[in-house]
Image 1 (cartoon, rainbow, N blue to C red):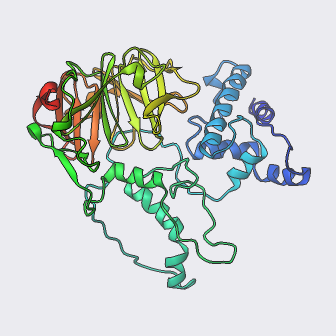
Image 2: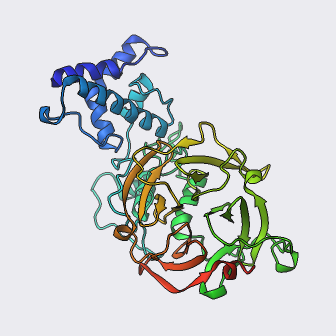
Image 3: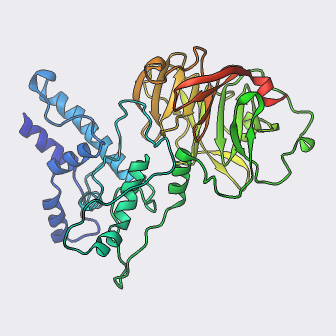
Length: 426
């Protein structure tokens, strides 16, 4: 039976010799066999199951073949998308070449077992090198390993692998020297900077002016470096005041609160602007039941019933544009309809309904974990949570019409709940 499976998988994972010679392709084939490719996908988190099923666990060889043909194709597509390749679902030459490339041994897809803190609780860290090999020299060790060390330091600080090929956190190693043999100093990409700032906040030593939402003890910082346009005397007086919260996001430093068919742009001084949902998010839902924005992907997700809408901000038009292939139906494995959503501090995209939550990946439209809120989010309010705003260790949990300040370190709510209207000063 196992031989039959491997023969069938070999036919599934076929490739074409479109742009390489038969001799070159044969060399790649010899290095990356079907078995090795399958092991690669498993080692780096793309396959959750092994390809050695027990005869007692499946009804027939035919059932095994059907199951694993889909599983392997899906895993290959995931890897190809992450590696910047065309997602064919086939083990073609380019995919085999990529699998041969030297890379970090850490998985690309981290199976989330527990929502823990994947960051240091302090920003000042020290390190020391306790021992060095006799060869090469200390100077060579310290300089020649910079590219790799920066990548590993990123992991130590809490960053995971990135599909951005320019990112220092891309899993595949790049050349450390140029054509002339000169060392290439590693540089952080914009996505690296955004991701580390998402975990630890902006550099406090910078001179950019910052303001703080100190009303009612929220202490939530917002960017106020755009001049005097956001001062109270410039605010419109005909803007409404929402009664309830359906969702909340932060994009490019601006906070957006969803309520019914309206979207409110607000900051530390209150509501700046009011939009109709259909005007800001074209071809979207009539109202949202959860929203989140992820700076790593530059994508905003709106949820309505069992549907998800993905948008990116057109900064020229100042409007959110619906992405191709969306909206999508949420996976059948999701056991509830979302009534809230948020991006947690360690990067998980969380859907929530009462005491039930799930972590979600829109790229593969998969739920990676489902459980009860009380088992993973210590001391969250008993009231339903609609959304979350996070900056450094400051967290605001938004309920239907109240806001709670939550301490990530101590994992508890601080002080009394703030009424929504008082928080927005409207």
